Length: 334
Ligand code: TYM
Picture 1 (cartoon, helix red, strand yellow):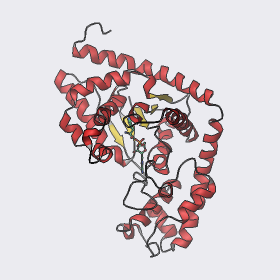
Picture 2: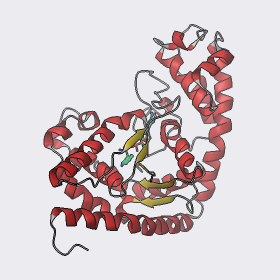
Picture 3: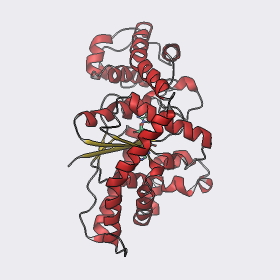
Picture 4: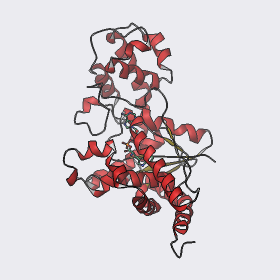
Protein backbone atom coordinates (compact mmCIF):
# COMPACT_ATOMS: atom_id res chain seq x y z
CA UNK A 1 0.00 0.00 0.00
CA UNK A 2 1.28 3.46 -0.86
CA UNK A 3 2.23 5.82 1.93
CA UNK A 4 3.49 9.38 1.45
CA UNK A 5 6.04 11.09 3.66
CA UNK A 6 7.75 14.45 3.36
CA UNK A 7 9.41 17.01 5.61
CA UNK A 8 10.40 20.66 5.66
CA UNK A 9 12.96 22.35 7.90
CA UNK A 10 11.64 25.02 10.26
CA UNK A 11 14.67 27.20 9.64
CA UNK A 12 13.40 30.59 8.58
CA UNK A 13 10.83 31.84 6.10
CA UNK A 14 8.96 29.53 3.79
CA UNK A 15 9.65 30.53 0.19
CA UNK A 16 7.80 30.26 -3.09
CA UNK A 17 10.30 27.47 -3.86
CA UNK A 18 9.14 25.46 -0.84
CA UNK A 19 5.55 26.11 -1.85
CA UNK A 20 5.76 25.16 -5.54
CA UNK A 21 8.36 22.41 -5.13
CA UNK A 22 6.72 20.80 -2.12
CA UNK A 23 3.83 22.26 -0.09
CA UNK A 24 1.44 22.93 -2.97
CA UNK A 25 1.73 19.31 -4.08
CA UNK A 26 1.44 17.74 -0.62
CA UNK A 27 -2.34 17.97 -0.56
CA UNK A 28 -2.63 15.86 -3.75
CA UNK A 29 -2.00 12.52 -2.06
CA UNK A 30 -4.19 13.42 0.91
CA UNK A 31 -7.03 14.31 -1.47
CA UNK A 32 -6.59 11.03 -3.33
CA UNK A 33 -7.08 9.21 -0.02
CA UNK A 34 -3.46 8.03 0.29
CA UNK A 35 -2.11 7.95 3.83
CA UNK A 36 0.07 11.05 4.08
CA UNK A 37 2.53 12.03 6.78
CA UNK A 38 4.20 15.45 6.96
CA UNK A 39 6.85 16.55 9.37
CA UNK A 40 8.49 19.75 10.59
CA UNK A 41 12.06 18.46 10.74
CA UNK A 42 13.38 20.44 13.69
CA UNK A 43 16.15 17.88 14.32
CA UNK A 44 17.46 18.59 10.84
CA UNK A 45 17.26 22.34 11.44
CA UNK A 46 19.55 22.12 14.49
CA UNK A 47 22.40 20.64 12.42
CA UNK A 48 23.30 24.32 12.22
CA UNK A 49 22.72 26.48 15.31
CA UNK A 50 19.19 27.84 15.68
CA UNK A 51 18.06 30.54 18.01
CA UNK A 52 15.60 28.72 20.35
CA UNK A 53 12.94 31.44 20.24
CA UNK A 54 13.13 31.61 16.44
CA UNK A 55 13.00 27.82 16.11
CA UNK A 56 9.84 27.70 18.22
CA UNK A 57 8.24 30.40 16.08
CA UNK A 58 9.39 28.90 12.76
CA UNK A 59 8.08 25.44 13.72
CA UNK A 60 4.61 26.78 14.49
CA UNK A 61 4.61 29.01 11.44
CA UNK A 62 5.59 26.04 9.26
CA UNK A 63 2.68 24.05 10.70
CA UNK A 64 0.43 27.00 9.80
CA UNK A 65 1.97 26.96 6.31
CA UNK A 66 1.12 23.27 5.85
CA UNK A 67 -2.48 23.86 6.88
CA UNK A 68 -2.86 27.06 4.84
CA UNK A 69 -1.56 25.14 1.79
CA UNK A 70 -4.46 22.72 2.03
CA UNK A 71 -3.39 20.00 4.43
CA UNK A 72 -6.16 18.79 6.67
CA UNK A 73 -4.67 17.71 10.02
CA UNK A 74 -7.47 15.17 10.46
CA UNK A 75 -6.85 13.44 7.13
CA UNK A 76 -3.05 13.82 7.03
CA UNK A 77 -0.64 13.44 9.92
CA UNK A 78 1.21 16.67 10.79
CA UNK A 79 3.82 16.61 13.51
CA UNK A 80 7.15 17.83 14.77
CA UNK A 81 10.08 15.41 14.27
CA UNK A 82 11.64 15.78 17.74
CA UNK A 83 8.39 14.57 19.33
CA UNK A 84 8.61 11.15 17.70
CA UNK A 85 11.77 9.57 19.15
CA UNK A 86 11.68 6.67 16.67
CA UNK A 87 13.21 9.01 14.05
CA UNK A 88 16.39 9.43 16.08
CA UNK A 89 16.45 5.78 17.06
CA UNK A 90 16.18 4.62 13.45
CA UNK A 91 18.77 7.25 12.47
CA UNK A 92 21.28 5.56 14.79
CA UNK A 93 20.65 2.23 13.07
CA UNK A 94 21.22 3.92 9.71
CA UNK A 95 24.38 5.62 10.98
CA UNK A 96 25.68 2.09 11.34
CA UNK A 97 24.45 0.99 7.89
CA UNK A 98 25.50 4.02 5.83
CA UNK A 99 29.15 4.50 4.86
CA UNK A 100 31.25 7.64 5.44
CA UNK A 101 32.07 7.75 1.73
CA UNK A 102 28.36 7.98 0.83
CA UNK A 103 27.90 10.97 3.11
CA UNK A 104 30.99 12.72 1.79
CA UNK A 105 29.52 12.73 -1.71
CA UNK A 106 26.40 14.68 -0.71
CA UNK A 107 26.35 18.03 -2.50
CA UNK A 108 24.13 19.62 0.19
CA UNK A 109 26.74 18.77 2.82
CA UNK A 110 29.51 20.22 0.66
CA UNK A 111 27.49 23.40 0.06
CA UNK A 112 26.47 23.86 3.68
CA UNK A 113 29.78 22.94 5.25
CA UNK A 114 31.68 25.14 2.79
CA UNK A 115 35.45 25.23 2.85
CA UNK A 116 35.73 24.48 6.52
CA UNK A 117 34.17 21.00 6.70
CA UNK A 118 36.16 20.11 9.84
CA UNK A 119 34.11 22.71 11.71
CA UNK A 120 30.73 21.40 10.53
CA UNK A 121 28.66 19.55 13.13
CA UNK A 122 28.63 15.77 13.12
CA UNK A 123 24.86 16.12 12.73
CA UNK A 124 25.25 18.02 9.47
CA UNK A 125 27.42 15.21 8.14
CA UNK A 126 24.94 12.52 9.20
CA UNK A 127 21.91 14.56 8.10
CA UNK A 128 20.98 12.19 5.21
CA UNK A 129 20.88 9.15 7.54
CA UNK A 130 18.29 10.94 9.69
CA UNK A 131 16.39 11.80 6.53
CA UNK A 132 16.40 8.15 5.46
CA UNK A 133 15.12 7.28 8.94
CA UNK A 134 12.27 9.83 8.62
CA UNK A 135 11.07 8.06 5.51
CA UNK A 136 11.82 4.41 6.19
CA UNK A 137 10.58 4.34 9.80
CA UNK A 138 7.11 4.64 8.17
CA UNK A 139 7.89 2.31 5.26
CA UNK A 140 6.91 5.28 3.09
CA UNK A 141 6.75 4.53 -0.63
CA UNK A 142 6.44 8.04 -2.12
CA UNK A 143 8.28 11.21 -1.16
CA UNK A 144 7.18 14.47 -2.83
CA UNK A 145 10.11 16.92 -2.86
CA UNK A 146 11.86 19.53 -4.99
CA UNK A 147 14.73 18.64 -7.30
CA UNK A 148 17.40 19.54 -4.71
CA UNK A 149 16.46 16.55 -2.52
CA UNK A 150 16.97 13.96 -5.25
CA UNK A 151 20.46 12.94 -4.14
CA UNK A 152 19.29 12.46 -0.54
CA UNK A 153 16.48 10.22 -1.73
CA UNK A 154 18.86 8.09 -3.77
CA UNK A 155 20.92 7.67 -0.62
CA UNK A 156 17.75 6.68 1.27
CA UNK A 157 17.22 3.91 -1.27
CA UNK A 158 20.82 2.83 -0.92
CA UNK A 159 20.56 2.65 2.88
CA UNK A 160 17.33 0.63 2.72
CA UNK A 161 18.85 -1.75 0.19
CA UNK A 162 22.02 -2.23 2.19
CA UNK A 163 20.04 -3.00 5.34
CA UNK A 164 17.92 -5.54 3.44
CA UNK A 165 21.06 -7.08 1.97
CA UNK A 166 23.12 -7.14 5.19
CA UNK A 167 20.34 -8.85 7.15
CA UNK A 168 18.96 -10.96 4.31
CA UNK A 169 15.45 -9.55 4.52
CA UNK A 170 13.00 -7.71 2.27
CA UNK A 171 12.02 -5.30 5.02
CA UNK A 172 12.41 -1.72 3.79
CA UNK A 173 10.46 -0.87 0.62
CA UNK A 174 11.89 0.96 -2.38
CA UNK A 175 11.04 4.61 -1.88
CA UNK A 176 10.20 6.70 -4.89
CA UNK A 177 10.95 10.40 -5.11
CA UNK A 178 8.02 12.35 -6.57
CA UNK A 179 9.53 15.36 -8.33
CA UNK A 180 6.84 16.75 -10.61
CA UNK A 181 5.48 19.88 -12.22
CA UNK A 182 6.88 23.02 -13.79
CA UNK A 183 8.64 24.30 -10.67
CA UNK A 184 10.72 21.50 -9.19
CA UNK A 185 13.63 23.95 -8.96
CA UNK A 186 12.56 27.58 -8.41
CA UNK A 187 15.49 29.93 -8.93
CA UNK A 188 16.49 33.18 -7.21
CA UNK A 189 14.75 36.30 -8.56
CA UNK A 190 18.16 38.00 -8.60
CA UNK A 191 20.17 35.25 -10.30
CA UNK A 192 18.56 32.63 -12.52
CA UNK A 193 21.41 30.19 -11.94
CA UNK A 194 20.99 30.05 -8.14
CA UNK A 195 18.28 28.21 -6.24
CA UNK A 196 15.67 30.33 -4.45
CA UNK A 197 16.50 29.75 -0.81
CA UNK A 198 15.35 30.82 2.63
CA UNK A 199 18.98 31.39 3.58
CA UNK A 200 19.89 33.80 0.75
CA UNK A 201 21.01 37.07 2.39
CA UNK A 202 18.97 39.12 -0.11
CA UNK A 203 15.25 39.15 0.67
CA UNK A 204 14.64 40.42 -2.89
CA UNK A 205 15.90 37.06 -4.21
CA UNK A 206 12.84 35.21 -2.93
CA UNK A 207 9.12 35.47 -2.32
CA UNK A 208 8.24 34.47 1.23
CA UNK A 209 4.86 32.94 1.97
CA UNK A 210 4.48 35.64 4.62
CA UNK A 211 5.02 38.55 2.16
CA UNK A 212 2.07 40.88 1.68
CA UNK A 213 0.60 41.69 -1.74
CA UNK A 214 2.67 44.87 -2.28
CA UNK A 215 5.91 43.12 -1.42
CA UNK A 216 5.18 40.21 -3.75
CA UNK A 217 4.35 42.59 -6.64
CA UNK A 218 7.46 44.71 -6.00
CA UNK A 219 9.79 41.69 -5.91
CA UNK A 220 8.43 40.44 -9.24
CA UNK A 221 8.64 43.90 -10.82
CA UNK A 222 12.30 44.11 -9.76
CA UNK A 223 13.16 40.51 -10.69
CA UNK A 224 16.24 40.26 -12.89
CA UNK A 225 15.57 39.60 -16.60
CA UNK A 226 17.43 39.96 -19.87
CA UNK A 227 16.39 42.79 -22.23
CA UNK A 228 14.74 40.62 -24.94
CA UNK A 229 11.00 39.94 -25.00
CA UNK A 230 9.88 36.39 -24.15
CA UNK A 231 10.62 33.86 -26.91
CA UNK A 232 7.74 32.40 -28.90
CA UNK A 233 8.06 28.86 -27.52
CA UNK A 234 9.52 26.78 -24.68
CA UNK A 235 12.70 25.87 -26.60
CA UNK A 236 13.59 29.56 -26.75
CA UNK A 237 13.80 29.61 -22.94
CA UNK A 238 16.67 27.16 -22.80
CA UNK A 239 19.63 29.51 -22.44
CA UNK A 240 17.64 32.25 -20.67
CA UNK A 241 17.59 31.18 -17.01
CA UNK A 242 15.76 34.25 -15.62
CA UNK A 243 13.04 34.18 -18.27
CA UNK A 244 12.65 30.45 -17.89
CA UNK A 245 12.33 30.74 -14.13
CA UNK A 246 9.54 33.33 -14.32
CA UNK A 247 7.67 31.27 -16.92
CA UNK A 248 8.04 28.12 -14.81
CA UNK A 249 6.67 29.99 -11.79
CA UNK A 250 3.75 31.23 -13.88
CA UNK A 251 3.02 27.72 -15.12
CA UNK A 252 3.17 26.15 -11.66
CA UNK A 253 1.03 28.86 -10.03
CA UNK A 254 -1.62 28.59 -12.76
CA UNK A 255 -1.48 24.76 -12.98
CA UNK A 256 -0.61 24.83 -16.66
CA UNK A 257 2.16 23.27 -18.69
CA UNK A 258 5.03 25.49 -19.83
CA UNK A 259 3.93 24.90 -23.44
CA UNK A 260 0.45 26.24 -22.67
CA UNK A 261 1.89 29.27 -20.91
CA UNK A 262 4.13 30.01 -23.89
CA UNK A 263 1.10 29.92 -26.18
CA UNK A 264 -0.42 32.62 -23.97
CA UNK A 265 2.60 34.84 -23.30
CA UNK A 266 5.17 34.01 -26.02
CA UNK A 267 6.65 37.16 -27.60
CA UNK A 268 5.43 39.51 -24.85
CA UNK A 269 7.91 42.01 -23.38
CA UNK A 270 8.63 41.67 -19.64
CA UNK A 271 6.84 44.98 -19.09
CA UNK A 272 3.64 43.09 -19.98
CA UNK A 273 4.48 39.65 -18.58
CA UNK A 274 5.69 40.77 -15.15
CA UNK A 275 2.40 42.46 -14.14
CA UNK A 276 0.53 39.30 -15.22
CA UNK A 277 2.84 37.19 -13.08
CA UNK A 278 2.57 39.61 -10.16
CA UNK A 279 -1.25 39.48 -10.27
CA UNK A 280 -1.22 35.70 -10.41
CA UNK A 281 1.31 35.39 -7.57
CA UNK A 282 -0.61 37.80 -5.34
CA UNK A 283 -3.83 35.98 -6.15
CA UNK A 284 -2.36 32.60 -5.13
CA UNK A 285 0.03 33.53 -2.32
CA UNK A 286 -1.76 36.32 -0.42
CA UNK A 287 -4.63 34.03 0.77
CA UNK A 288 -2.07 31.55 2.12
CA UNK A 289 -0.18 34.25 3.92
CA UNK A 290 -3.45 35.63 5.38
CA UNK A 291 -4.47 32.17 6.55
CA UNK A 292 -1.05 31.59 8.14
CA UNK A 293 -1.36 34.87 10.03
CA UNK A 294 -4.84 33.89 11.22
CA UNK A 295 -3.67 30.48 12.42
CA UNK A 296 -0.68 32.00 14.23
CA UNK A 297 -3.08 34.01 16.43
CA UNK A 298 -3.84 30.81 18.35
CA UNK A 299 -0.66 28.80 18.72
CA UNK A 300 -2.28 26.57 21.33
CA UNK A 301 -4.45 25.13 18.53
CA UNK A 302 -1.33 24.52 16.41
CA UNK A 303 0.40 22.86 19.36
CA UNK A 304 -2.63 20.65 19.90
CA UNK A 305 -2.57 19.57 16.23
CA UNK A 306 1.14 18.73 16.46
CA UNK A 307 0.71 16.73 19.67
CA UNK A 308 -2.12 14.74 18.16
CA UNK A 309 -0.10 14.20 14.95
CA UNK A 310 2.92 12.96 16.91
CA UNK A 311 0.83 10.33 18.68
CA UNK A 312 -0.59 9.08 15.37
CA UNK A 313 2.87 9.07 13.73
CA UNK A 314 4.32 7.14 16.64
CA UNK A 315 1.68 4.48 16.38
CA UNK A 316 3.03 3.70 12.90
CA UNK A 317 6.75 4.20 13.57
CA UNK A 318 7.06 2.31 16.85
CA UNK A 319 6.26 -1.20 15.56
CA UNK A 320 8.49 -0.70 12.49
CA UNK A 321 11.42 0.30 14.71
CA UNK A 322 10.79 -2.69 16.99
CA UNK A 323 10.76 -5.03 13.99
CA UNK A 324 14.02 -3.46 12.81
CA UNK A 325 15.63 -4.13 16.20
CA UNK A 326 14.37 -7.68 16.16
CA UNK A 327 15.82 -8.33 12.70
CA UNK A 328 19.16 -7.04 14.00
CA UNK A 329 19.14 -9.34 17.01
CA UNK A 330 18.42 -6.86 19.76
CA UNK A 331 17.02 -8.69 22.76
CA UNK A 332 13.87 -7.44 24.44
CA UNK A 333 12.32 -6.09 21.30
CA UNK A 334 8.62 -6.99 20.89
P1 TYM B 1 14.00 22.04 2.84
O1 TYM B 1 13.44 22.39 4.18
O2 TYM B 1 15.24 22.70 2.39
O3 TYM B 1 12.91 22.27 1.73
C1 TYM B 1 11.59 21.76 1.86
C2 TYM B 1 11.05 21.33 0.51
O4 TYM B 1 11.05 22.43 -0.40
C3 TYM B 1 11.75 22.07 -1.59
N1 TYM B 1 12.44 23.26 -2.11
C4 TYM B 1 12.34 23.70 -3.36
N2 TYM B 1 11.67 23.24 -4.42
C5 TYM B 1 11.78 23.93 -5.58
N3 TYM B 1 12.54 25.05 -5.71
C6 TYM B 1 13.25 25.54 -4.68
N4 TYM B 1 13.98 26.65 -4.81
C7 TYM B 1 13.17 24.86 -3.42
N5 TYM B 1 13.73 25.06 -2.21
C8 TYM B 1 13.28 24.07 -1.41
C9 TYM B 1 12.73 20.99 -1.16
O5 TYM B 1 13.12 20.19 -2.26
C10 TYM B 1 11.91 20.23 -0.16
O6 TYM B 1 11.04 19.31 -0.79
N6 TYM B 1 16.22 17.61 3.71
C11 TYM B 1 14.93 18.28 3.47
C12 TYM B 1 13.94 18.07 4.58
C13 TYM B 1 13.67 16.65 4.93
C14 TYM B 1 12.91 15.71 4.19
C15 TYM B 1 12.91 14.52 4.95
C16 TYM B 1 12.25 15.79 2.97
C17 TYM B 1 14.10 16.01 6.07
N7 TYM B 1 13.61 14.75 6.09
C18 TYM B 1 12.24 13.38 4.50
C19 TYM B 1 11.59 14.62 2.51
C20 TYM B 1 11.59 13.45 3.28
C21 TYM B 1 15.19 19.77 3.32
O7 TYM B 1 16.16 20.30 3.78
O8 TYM B 1 14.16 20.45 2.74
